[in-house]
Length: 279
Image (cartoon, rainbow, N blue to C red):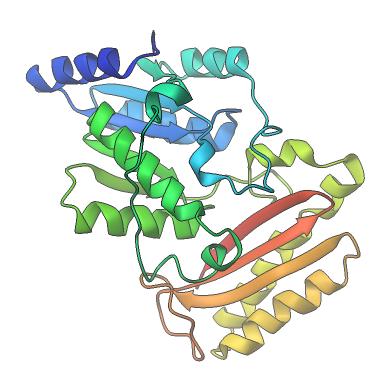
């Protein structure tokens, strides 16, 4: 497994693979890898000649009051996990190289960033789209793999990829969950034992709404209201939003038809968690 730290070396590696006619499967991450990331890595390895993971805690997607400095990091553990998944190369760039002095170009994806996370984390998706575009240009993947837990992020990246005619195929994989339903996330490490015990209520609330939908309920307000009711019963949970949106455009819905997503953001203590379920 190659550990690549410079942009030029990563580009040389990718150029060599492309000249040889080999496909590259790419998983961009911010590190502190868990089974959700590794399921993407295995998919990238199984579907392509070479697999690449990037580990880069992207400062551009954190707001001034967010957890950039405290974001969990474990480079040695991450590299061990990549070895176990037979990753071919791990790209570990430096922030000063990714964003050198004078850097002044950013990517704004409109409309799909105006709802949900976009109304609460101003500038977040600008940072996400910018770094993903840079990583696509550096790694030159045939396919890039993302988890459905960050649903709005996958919509933003797909829209950017389409609008800018990027070559990479964006592959979205199902959310990987703990046995009790909690969506795997690096931020779960922030949860205290009592908070961790309370956190699965988010998935229980989503699953309850999905059952209502499967039983015939089509009112978006009724479905979101069922989530709010369940979460209100857990004192540790502070709900930020429960919204039903079109799965492709993320436009808010009043009546649910096929192709909708029910998304939730909530705080448990100092930890902010997001999750969603498809209807």
